[in-house]
Length: 334
Ligand SMILES: NC(=O)c1ccc[n+]([C@@H]2O[C@H](COP(=O)([O-])OP(=O)(O)OC[C@H]3O[C@@H](n4cnc5c(N)ncnc54)[C@H](OP(=O)(O)O)[C@@H]3O)[C@@H](O)[C@H]2O)c1
Image 1 (tube, protein in one colour):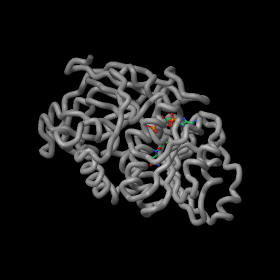
Image 2: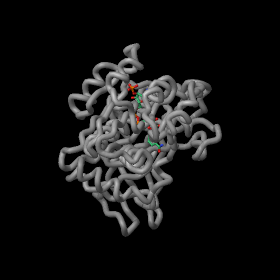
Image 3: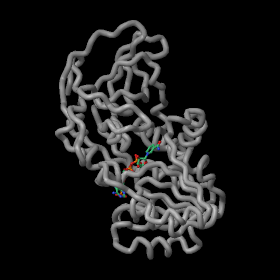
Image 4: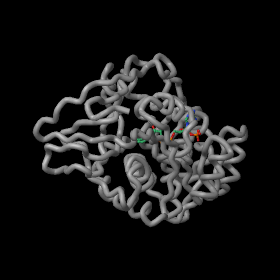
């Protein structure tokens, strides 16, 4: 572990060609510079590993600039203020921010928000009560506009975003259908999270199982993966269905993920809308308040996969892209 004078950090060493590998990352140890006026030092406790990071590793045209080479990998963090020359933060404050893949981060405070770790566990501010939770909230409420009695499906249903989508849909009086990889994840989605059904897309009968899970068709779909899963769901969409296109993780290593029958959009008069949650900062306060209340009162459950130590981050990140995580993927840094 780094002492107070040194900081261990993981940099992007090279851009992936095809699948990302651990060789794309480099662990370095650098001394911490003294704080300037206005700056805050945070000892990061948890690092969030998120699929969007795979996009930033590439320099293909996207909604955000690529992660620069030889700089610390971007990443959401929660931690504790250990030193402050900024009047808005005091030593001991628990904060959520974008500290990156490193043990200590130094900030001017603009990316930091003080959080209450007594009400909700600190790590949840990177998951159900953080960016993934707001993503679920936005797609469900603002794009799908789920109404009581409708059937809502979500892929990557046991994951950070998907698990919140289904629970919020249930709370809104909808029928919630999950799609996840493997029997264990599906069991969790139904038995613990309370979805009405879950389809294991790896079991080899995706279309039949989807039909059985949603006998009245699907009104709203929250898409996280793309590819064959999207094609199969499209076949079950009801007229005037809405699709929130949140992610297409099956294509993040550069594989093409074509939609096989776009005529369904016309036939069923579907709406499909892509979105990036950080472009909708206006909803964050309302969504975070609601999500925080639900987690604090035990109405919104979450699960975490926690890798130990900064050096475990690259493997854990690559594993998450392949579904090895079960719930929100984090790295515990202290
Ligand atoms: N638009 C936005 O603003 C925004 C914000 C946050 C997240 N997202 C997107 O939301 C999605 C979920 O993110 P998350 O953070 O909640 O991650 P997550 O669901 O916790 O983890 C990723 C999951 O994706 C699934 N997966 C991986 N490869 C797959 C494949 N080839 N086919 C089907 N499923 C596959 C795996 O679940 P299984 O084992 O079930 O396959 C894996 O556990 C991602 O697509 C991400 O990019 C978008």
